[in-house]
Length: 386
Image 1: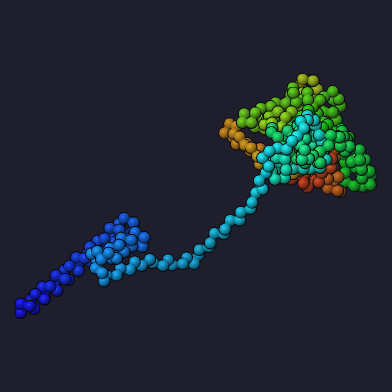
Image 2: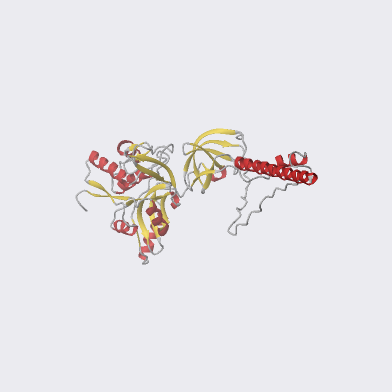
């Protein structure tokens, strides 16, 4: 009886001790759960393995297995594509030997201007056929260093020449003669005898005021000059102090920090000129009119100063500033020409372009650029009616 009682008591102690051990193990896992969540594989696993392998507390025969749950696949998961990395060529760091020059050169055909002296450098802009640019150095590798947009740019010298192109003139007789003959042959066309004026080199960035000079010359004011109009009558302002509808932003004689202006500014300059010279003329803002309606004035003998883009390239958006809580975003490649003819049979517009001379542009493309530049336009008429 005594032996049976001792055996039962020993069994009771064994069960009680085992329960105590399991309770301590459960308490251990709860403490780790509170500290690091359910990720027992990394933190709890190391602690338990140490105690199990050392026979500490759980005994040599106790095996503890930590299970890491297998995640359920997401049926909507789409893996991100590995980005394609394209190597960028490393440009040379030392400018090639060069000869310093100070000359105006002409562009034989359109070419990109780059940040450095090879095609490894990124493009910072472009220059167009017959453009007049300031070259400051010729490099031994066949490239030229140019004064460009307030800094320096580079292009291949083979695109440049010191000889003035033959097709740059005050008027293109071939276009005028063709248009006259086309009209006699029944084509729907018309042209005014407008003599072009080139804006460069005096007004590097001044096509708008040059266009006013072209129109005044056409009206018979032979003494007018583009430089006089720019210096005495054109209102200018720095970016951030006025809008391009209030003043010419920058300085038309330079590319540095210069942008341009739109019709109201040229109207203001013309009115000041007329008042100063006591002329019975007035300048009228025609902004907003359709291109087709402007051609009615051309057909009536009135050339139209019209805004478009250089070489009719697509307008992009550039620098911006705020004036009186109004955000101004500059429309790049802004340019002005004098529309002086058309050929609807061919679908062309004839313009006196201050950068090129008398030129013929595709009418549809010209209309797009005109629309992109606010449909800005103005004309000069008699003050007391025509």
